[in-house]
Length: 252
Image 1 (cartoon, one colour):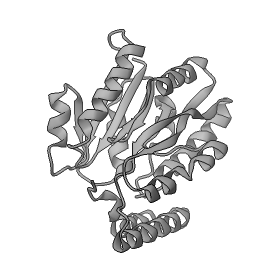
Image 2 (cartoon, one colour):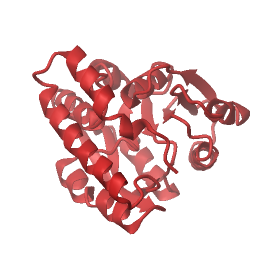
Image 3 (cartoon, rainbow, N blue to C red):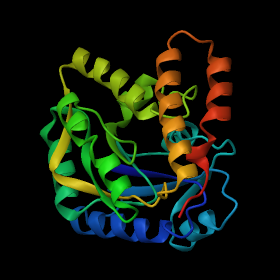
C-alpha cells in the first residue's frame, strides 16, 4: 500500500463527510488500483456522531480517549499500512493538483515528506489573514501546518511520532525531528506552494472574548513549546491540558 490518510477528528460530524468524499475522489482518480491507499479516522473521544459518519462511508475508525491532537494522530498512524502517511485535518480539502504534486514527491525518491501552504476558506477576513500570514514561514523554513503533513511511515516510527507532551505546535516539533533524520539519510522535507491546501477558517469569531482567548492561547502555545525542552514531561502535559484547551473545543 502506498498512502494511508489519517484524519484526527473531535466533534467533526458536520464537516467530516465532505472531507472524506473529497480525498476519496482525489485518490480514486490518481491511484485507481485496488489496495493502493486507505483512509483512517481517529475518533478523538467525540461527543457527536463523528465515528458514525466515517463508518457509514466505509472508513476504518480507531478511537483515542484523550482529547489531544498529538495522541489522535499517533493513534491513527499506528493502524496505518501505507508506505507514506498523509495527516489531514477533518476540515481540509486538498485539490487534485496538490495531490498530483504529492505523488510526484513520493515517486521522486528524494523526500522524507512535505507540507503545503494554506488557503483559508470561510470564517472571518481577520482569521484568513491571521492564518495565511504563516505561509512565507512555512515555505522558506520548510515547515508544515498540521492540517496537511506527509511523511514516510518508517521515518514517522523512527521519530516516535508526535510529541504527546505538546498540546499545540506539535507539528513544528515533529517536522524538526523528521528533518534531522532526513539529513542523515540525505533526503529533504519539501513544501508545496503552487497549489495551497484549502482548510477551514471557521474558528475564532471576531469578538472581544474570542480575541482574548486566541492571543492568550497563541502566547501560551509558544511559551510551552519553548519550555518543553526543559520542563518535566508530566508538568508540560499538565500545563498544556489546562491552558490550551481552547483549541480542543468545537467551534463552527
